[in-house]
Length: 370
Image (cartoon, rainbow, N blue to C red; front, side, top):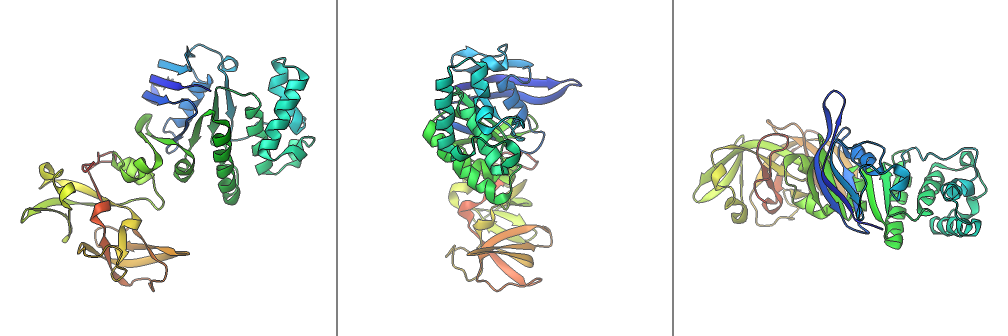
């Protein structure tokens, strides 16, 4: 186990394509950190540089006390699990898991002990004599993880390992990986484009866009206190609603005006917004920050938004209502599933102003109320 450090790391591909730009990230010993972001954001390139599969253009990467910029992959004391599992089809599960240890020249008895212990941890002991073609997708994934475990590395690297599994199996494997980390306490760096996967797995998540680290924090920190509009919109399902408008001052209060609908900011937010009165801003509201008139979830608040209902998606106890205003055609509110709503129905949404965010204009406009 070891600490991992990215110290001003940059990767530029031919054609001056900057894949990772001045990345600084410290990962503690035994921490589970997830790199998340859309395709092309630099997360996989970051992982490949850590693994030694891509050369670094600038900066330093450390694993433990060693600078590994020029250390070959096999000497970095890491184990990587890929999206496609990369199992040898002609070998049994046992031989797949034992292969790297055999190459290192470990005694057969130690190899056997490590393989069987890892198989027991992952519940694949009865599969050791099968070949990959006789395994399900979930079983192959467990074998790939088992092959990493037996090496007892300083760090595990996972590159979108669950993306080939069906939805039910992905949920099961997420829980499996979480239990595995709790048991082994090995430093883990995990790459995914799935923000739900990131939220459920990581001790911390690192949100990336266009090669830059946008925010790093615990899942709840990133969810409740996004530093900019991109992070706010990327993290959360359904995503945060955004409304373009202007800040106004009236009778000592600060209001957000959206085409005549006005939202009064609570004092703790208003105090931070004085310099933005009269300027264009973006208001952000998560679906659960909205309720229907009569639900009583945000009693005593009169901040409302008239909308027209569109598609309704029941989700058991809750349901998502896709709605629109004259100025904003895409709004999602998560409301009580017992609400009797039909398409084209006129609704009044109440907004919980304690949970609202205000951002500078622009895709990565900063959060003005943090």
